[in-house]
Length: 416
Image (tube, helix red, strand yellow):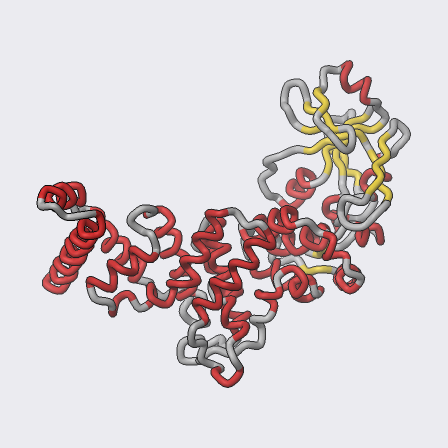
């Protein structure tokens, strides 16, 4: 029985990145032997075990054979005679198809039959073999790795293979949960724009996210968007969300905030009147199709509808500011409102030449919300009820008190 560290742990070690998780392959063993050594079985589709002490995963060496469509159509074979080379050959990219073990000398011994170390040095994402085409999830993984390693390029042969897979309809077999999982992971990488550039280059973006794909080539007014192209703007916004270390809900909101610009009538271009409402409608279909988590959808919906008002909030009256907070449900959900403001800052700074610009709207609206929250609504409600006011009337009194508090705050800012 021989044990090797494989996959991401080896890759990240060669990249000089922190190694957080270790995966192991066991060659020459049976499930019975693993159980005898105290390993705990956890694999459903193939033999995977947890180490009795470290709880790290140890998988028996295996091969895979395509048996149907999509990423689930595989027959897995695991046996003591499956070699390390056979196990590594089934992997997606050369940089993920390396193994390492400690030799008798105490030195780390690298097994690299597909030249993954060479591709890492050359900064290339390259498929291991033609078997890559058997699993469409691998297209998403390549795009995600491009976002994680933005100085890596996709090998021409790998890009061609991905295009062929898209042309043959392989992307149609992906389930929504897996698409969202990879999309979410890609959004959280160092340069999320690279994920969408790769998906667009191979044709997968048009299949998976047509609402996003159609944004390229759509012009915007140059005085507001020096980059002009809406798709280019979207990529700048996504990378700004990474620069500002935004959470997933904010990054997804950035992805979806301008979807409506993709179907602006041609005679209105480069203006995009009413794109906010159209964006929210398109988002609804996208979120349902990919089964986007509720919190991500809710934040994105608010950003899509209200980002224009947030950008112009410095011009709003006290009453308009309170109405904006109410539409954003900021009083009940201040944490989500903070995410909305962060997404709006990403939008404003995700423009050519505006990357280092200040965005005072974020701090100002946070202060407006704090002012509204300081209003003693329970006292107002008790007084109104004692005077015979009903529910709607109580609500109006609370609203007026909040507007008055914000008006006072605005006046104080002017004299500060």
